[in-house]
Amino acid sequence: MTMLTLDAYQASSFTPRKSTAGRSGLHRLFAAAVVSDQFRAQLLSEPEAALTGGYLGQTFVLSDHEKRIIKTVRANNLTDFAQKVNQALKGNHSLA
Image 1 (cartoon, one colour):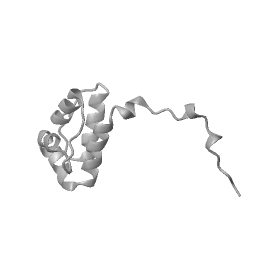
Image 2 (cartoon, rainbow, N blue to C red):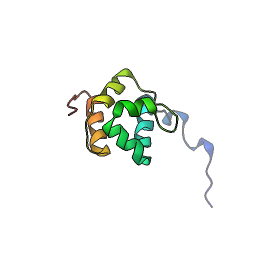
Image 3 (spheres, rainbow, N blue to C red):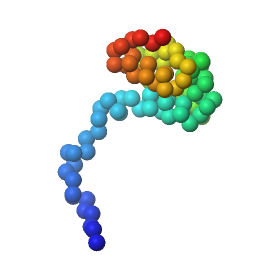
């Protein structure tokens, strides 16, 4: 029989990554695009309307920089869209 104890790991080994916490709005945006065909289509064709309308009554908390990127990216599918957003966030601003 194996027994697990709560003190098996030091608390300092569980530090959250700051970059993840700062991107929760983007994570929610992409999660909505993955689960909803309608939201995904709107995000790809009318990104400003998708940001304004949100998903299921919930808007996305994004920085002004993130909003500008989302509004200017042009892509035919969500994979390409995500890659372009990621590149723009890293400083490579080729969005077309």
